[in-house]
Image (tube, rainbow, N blue to C red; front, side, top):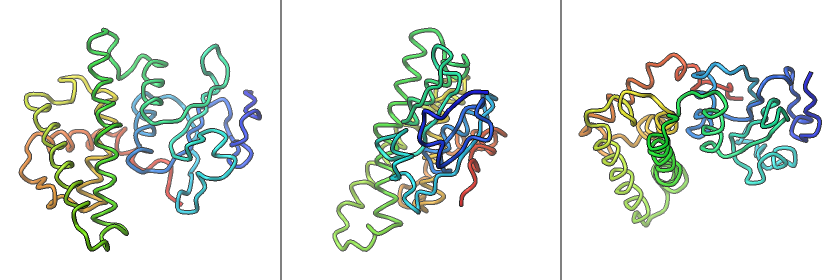
Length: 234
């Protein structure tokens, strides 16, 4: 049996199955990237619910694995060289799992980097901008009298959806006929902006054609449906 005692996070969230990959997460748009990926590739794992509402990401145990205090994070008991390996940042985890299993990331160099560029597009643009729109539209930011921040993030969110609309023209998935980690990274965020954030009208989502059809295809995948609910919310 693998010994994960070197990872302080396992003292607060003990591993019942230490030979399996350990996932520390919550079903947020960033968190579900990894749970969906794990469901898609079929790698056995054990999920631990991290309650961000109780600031559990700021506990010493969680910070020992991710000093940035954000979900998701993982421990792979069978990491590089066969040694336990901890990793944070959802995009990095997606690439790691894809390369570990040889799934959902093309191996041909040009296609591989093209996929990674769209993954970075989500990490650098879609996630931060959609998140700010959610804050100013749904959460405390909506009470700010000055609506210029909301308009800034609304306009940029709409622009980014336009980028996706153009990319998906004539394509089933971001990379054409092949479903990849680029789709996994983006699905939760696009779903969130029209669902949890309730901003569909704000960004004129109904005027799009390619993005809604792509989202419907993605959400119909059984692994996506499972991953969206893992780990269970507290």
